[in-house]
Length: 184
Image 1 (cartoon, rainbow, N blue to C red):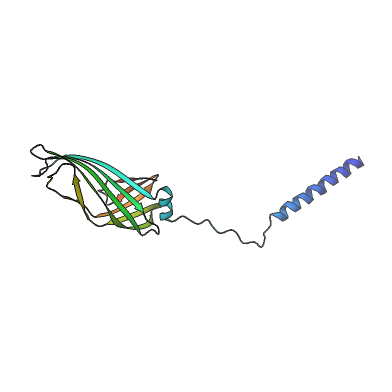
Image 2 (cartoon, helix red, strand yellow):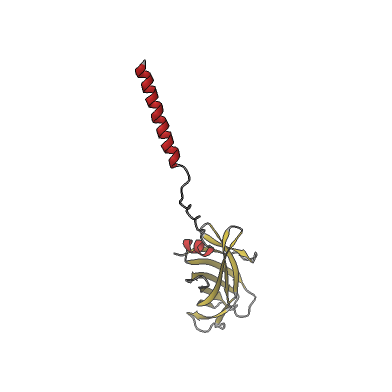
């Protein structure tokens, strides 16, 4: 009986000692807490997904033009984000098949680049990119000689894109239907 009492006391002392050592380890220390994690900038978030973005569209139309009655065009728009976040290069590539009112066909290409200004920001929790590029007049090259329209005007660009998943989706102006996918 005495040995049982001694064992019970010994277990009680051991439990009290271990509880005391655990509690003393959890107490306040003189160390400063770690800094809160740094939130990524909208530029970092967009560049994490891609440094170049592309959209391809196809158009087919009958035109009321004295030089072109029908056309089919494939447009490729590529946005190459520059370092430092304030500028980008916008590449335009276009392949055209055009038919005159007299039935003559022309196979043409249009290509060129312009410098664009960028602005990154957070908008309602989304990483947003505004792209502004001036109008460009690009030279048209045709396989067949004699096509009467030597240049193609690329309109000025002023579009705001939001990063949604793995794509940049145009949100402003609301009439633009554009979605860019990462190239790299």
